[in-house]
Image (cartoon, rainbow, N blue to C red; front, side, top):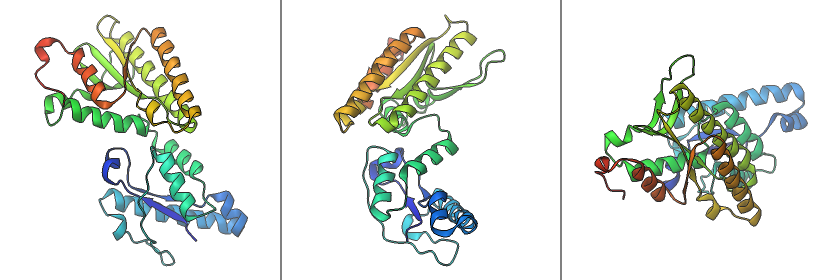
Length: 274
């Protein structure tokens, strides 16, 4: 029986996927198979093994060299999977090895515990954007992921890109209905952070921008998914107007880099976007 699935990035997914091991069997299914008391103990063992193996993976150990800490576990064969998102990849992995697992529950648990600033789609887009705009230039790279200590009692705000008066937050359109809620939370949170910065810095001192990654409109697999992305796009157009925030549309990381490059004054345009 498959109880755990270990994932690691492969080729282009290195920027958007973190190596980790996930329990496949949820508590309700363990209780159905083992009873309440034995299920609780089994779940504790699975979590312990998953945490141990995830720690080893984060230290750089490849899947091929992973060894569980307890007897009774063995590492099975390795497969290469593809997907547009972590959700899709986990779903494919779980379906390929077991009929008892639930990728939905694995995803929800991971997102709730990690509480990341970005969705995976935005994280990958931001990494490509930084590579296109800054390359190895440290001065330009320092403009990304800037922490702003705001005056008064306003909490600290992290901005995806900051240069002179420009404060830019980056968000992405969803490619599936399951991604839509997380994408909406991300966008609204970043608009709110821009508004916090504007108020704390007396409004006229900053120029807030929301850069919208729209490559999802091309990647969405179904008409319904594309419609979900279009609805989100329209909502962000209206929200940006309400927050008096400039909205920039980028169909790719290359185009996003050019848009950020054009925000800088002419005297600062010393580096070509590749």
